[in-house]
Image (cartoon, rainbow, N blue to C red; front, side, top):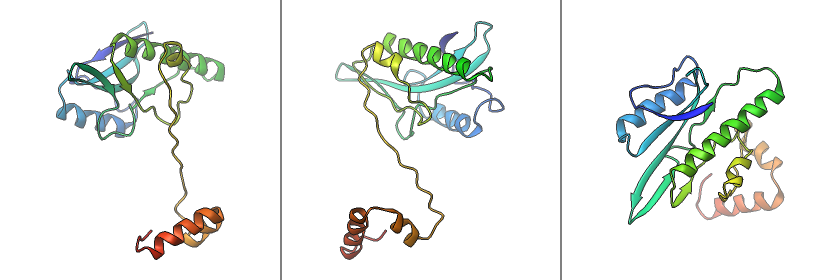
Length: 172
């Protein structure tokens, strides 16, 4: 496997990858220059694209930054594993993260802040290259039930805080 930058006019196929993510990718490519907004493709040795992610690079006051593109929740990492075996999928994921870590390291940014999709939690390859990993937690709540049901499932301390917000003219 190998990684290379993909030109802005050669998008990953939305039949293979998440169509929403590819559409977002096309919109972003129109906003930013290829110098700043870079799309990285993950390729098999037979030149088949099996994944991609994107990053935003810029320099200010002589400091090189490599960040999650402004306005996006994460770096859009997607890849396809051809195997049904769990062990093979984990091995492929580790190999992809090693390639990503090496690519980021080779860009030699002075400051890196990337948000990975919540499905990916194994950051070992980045740790090996001495990147600092700071987890950020996102809580997913089912908002289908009535507000009273949601409040009953919360701790009493959190319910009290919410009730105080309601009395302070903050509406939830």
